[in-house]
Image (cartoon, rainbow, N blue to C red):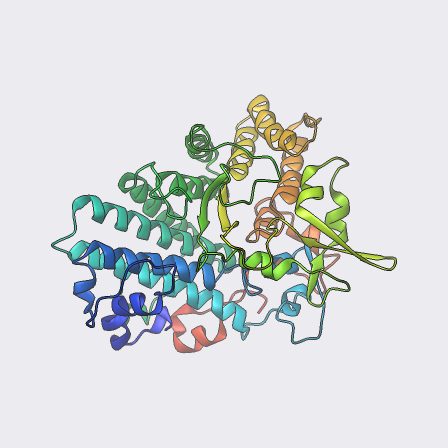
Amino acid sequence: MKMIHLTKQCVVGLSFLFIINGCDSFVEVDLPKSQLTSNAVFENYETANAALINIYAKIRDTGPLTGTNTGLTNQLGNYTDEIIAYGNPSNPSMQFYNNAVLPSSSIIAGYWNTSYNQIYAANSLMEGVENSTSLSIENKNQLKGEALFIRALAHFYLTSLFGNVPYIKTTDYQKNSTVSRDQSSEVYANIIADLENSILLLSETYSSSDRTRPNKLVCQALLARVYLNNKLYAQAANQASAVLNQTEIFSLEDPTKVFLISSRETIWQLQSAAAGQNTKEGSLFIFQTGPPTTMSLNPALVNSFPMGDLRKTNWIQPITKGSTTWYHVFKYKEQNNTAVSKEYSIIFRLAEQYLIRAEARIEQGDFIGAKEDLNKIRNRAGLGNTIASSKEEILNAIVQERRWEFFAEHGHRFFDLKRFEQLDASLSTIKPGWNSTDSLLPIPQNELSTNPNLRPQNPGY
C-alpha cells in the first residue's frame, strides 16, 4: 500500500493488518481468535504493542534501513567510494555504482513507499492510542513516544535522500493523496518537534536488555544528528552529551565486541525475525571465495586505514585467490543462523555521538574538547592521538575518522560528504557523469504521475 495514495479500505483495515502481517516470532503476542476491528486493537496494550513491534519489523525488512541489498548500507556504499559492484547489468547495485539512477528505479520507489508506509503506520498507531479509552497514561506515552520517533526517523531519511518531501501527520487518505512537498527546513523543524515530544514521553530506561525498543536516549541520539545536519552546533553537542553522560548504560567497546548483541556501545538495534537469526548485513556482505559475484569493498578505502588500526583488522576480511585479493565488510561475523542470535542490526551506536560532539565542538571553537572526543574513537581503534591542530585540520580528521568508523553503515559516508560539501570533490573523478545535482535522488516517477502536486522533479533528472 502506498501511503501517498491509500484507499479508504486500506485505512479502515490497517491496524488489523499490522498484526496479521507481523506475526512471525518477532511478535510474541498471541493472536486473538476473532477478527479485530481497528478500534479493538487499541483497547488492549498487548495488541497495540504488537502493532508497534510490527513497524520495527518492517523497518528491519524493507526500506532505507534494511540490511538487504536494496538498503542504504549497500546502495549508498556503491554510490560513493566504499563498495565496488560486480556482475551483469541486472545487479540492482549497478545503477548506483555507475551513477545511473533513474526516476523509474524500483529501489528509489521502494525507499519512498516503504518510508511513507511506516509513517502512515506510526500515524495510525498514534491516532488509535489517542482515541483509546482503556490504555493507561503510561502505556499511551510509551506507544506515542515510539511512534513519534519512527515518524521523525523516516522523514529524516526521506529529506536526506530526496530534499523537499511531504511531512505527513495524518491518516486522512483524501488529504494525503494531494499533498505537496515541504521545504527541507520545514521538514527538519517537524522532525525536531516530533523528537522533542518523544523525549518528553519516553523514559531513559530500556524496556528490554537487548535495546531493540527506542527510549529517550535513542531519540536524543537522532536529535543530535538532526541538529548537526542543520548546523545547530550547540544543540547537537548538548544532545550528544546527554547520551554520552549515561556512562552506566553506554561505553565504547573493543572493536571485536562492537557489533555483538550485548555491546554496551549500542544505542538502538533491530531485533532479528526469529531466535537464531542474525543480521541481513552479514548474509549480504560476507563471501568465502573469490572473485566476488556482486560486491566487495573498494581497495582505496581498505588501503586508507593507518597502520595498526584495529578496525581494519577486525571489520574487514581479505579473500585471496591466486595473486588477487578482495575484501568484504566483516563488522557482522555471522553469515548464517546460529543456535542463538549473536548479532542484531545496529542503527545507532555510541561512537557516532562522540564524533557528532567533536564536530559540533570544533565548530564552536572548542579545540580541546573536539580533539578529546576524536581521540576517544582513535584510541579505541588502537591509534594515537590526532596531530591535527587547526580548525580545518581537525574537521578533515573528523571526516576521515567517520569514513573508517562508519563504512557500510546506512549511508553515513554519503551523508557526511554532503554535509561537508565534499561530494563533488570526492566522487566527480570516480563516478561517470557526476553532477552536483546527484546529491539528491530522483522523486519516483510513479509518484509524480499519481500526484502532480509533488512536482517538479529534482534537478538533473
